[in-house]
Image 1 (tube, rainbow, N blue to C red):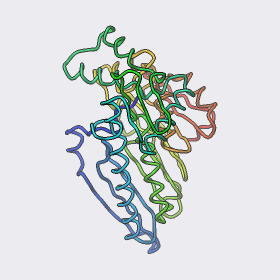
Image 2: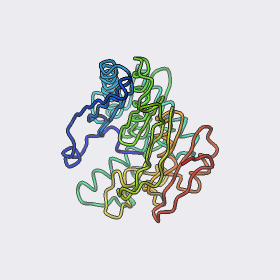
Image 3: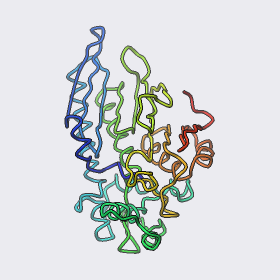
Image 4: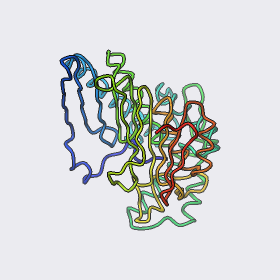
Amino acid sequence: MKLSGLLGLGAASAALLPAESAEAFLFNKKEYKVTKTRLAMGTFVAMTAIHPSRDEAEHAIGLAFEEIDRLNSLLTKFDADSPIGQLNRVGKLEGAPEEVLELVARSLYFHRETGGAFDITVNPLIDLYKKDFAEGKIPDSTQIEAALKLVGTEKLRFHSGTIEFTDSDMSITLDGIAKGYIVDRASDVLRKNGIGNHLINAGGDIRTSGTAAKGRPWTVAVQDPNKTKEYPDIITMKDGAIATSGNYEIYYDREKLFHHIIDSRTGLSPQLSTSVTVMAPTVMDADALSTSVFVLEPKAGVHFINGQPHCECFVITRDGTVSHSSGWQA
């Protein structure tokens, strides 16, 4: 699962940009382009609104960031007192918040749909990777096998507002789906406050609504895994969602054999893909599906997306080969 969702940002990255920035431009005396960027969910989140009133746009963006902070506090695993932190600590969460129940239910749905490629119970493996590599060690097969015994959605009981583990040592992470969910909810806040034309970019999890300045569609570039200025593809969007998973986001060794996406069925990081971009009706779904396709690996992943309604994908392999679903439009 993606480790990059609800984490603190590294000091080197944080030093590159201010914690918060804002700007506004007036187009043709009819509409403002208002953009605000700040640190949230362990990444830089940028919101751009197109609206006749600068004040109304800024107010709505402020409310959307408040919603991001509220949801982040519910869904992060890094706060022991958060609902997810409590569940991981004691193995049971009674009276779970609606948002947590919704995300766990959706996660279990994707687990079934992908044949186990998407698995929120993979957290013990993530913790093993983090711990060993922080100590300068590589996890061995015995450690991986031990962690795998704590993984499996069949060990997760989910009923009547209660989530419970059958093994007290297991734990979950929502990092592979929560960031997308939070972006969707922030977009809902903007629309409810009259900002129909907007774009939210949370570290590559992107939601677009309406149009950009002067009625043009939004332009979204697929990032090059090698971090050059040559984009593998550029698309235009109006109302839609897109998310990217890549082994270049967080990795533990120079060869990127161990990175933040882990196959819960093997305990290892998938090796054939380097970047997977998915378009879907919601960022929540795009977030989960991009991780799933990365785990499924290129051919099987593209085949899977071809069977998903209103979804498309764009896959880059380690050797630079590009493949995409049948309906992907550059």
